[in-house]
Length: 124
Image (tube, rainbow, N blue to C red; front, side):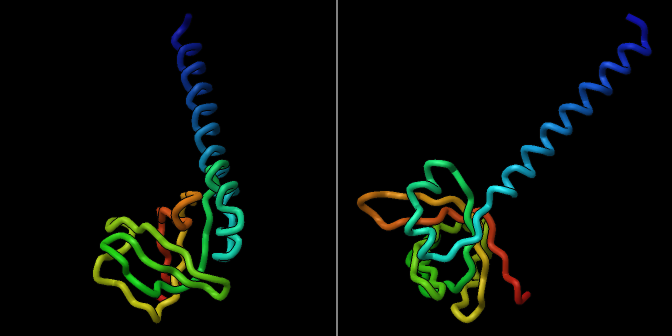
C-alpha cells in the first residue's frame, strides 16, 4: 500500500468517525422535551424508560438538602437533584426563574425526581 493510499484511508476513516460522533450529539439535543412539571409527572415512566432528557422552566421554592430542591412552575411541584458542580452553592434564590435540563427518575413509591445536568438562568 502506497503512502498516498494510507493517508487517504486515514482521512476517510477520520471523516466518518467525526460525522458519526456529531450525529450522535445532535441526536441527544433533538430528543430533549420541553415540558411542564405536570407533563413530566404524567409521563415520567416513559421519559425514564426511553432515557429522554427534559427541560422545565420555573422557580426553586425550597432547598431540602445540599442537592435536593423543590421546583415549581404554573402546573405543579417536582423535586430536583442538582449536583453542586451544576448549580452554584450560594445562588439559591426563589425569585429568579431558571430552566433546568435533566433526566427523569421515576419510582412507584417515591416522588418523581429530575436529575439535573444543566441549569440556565435566563435573566443573567
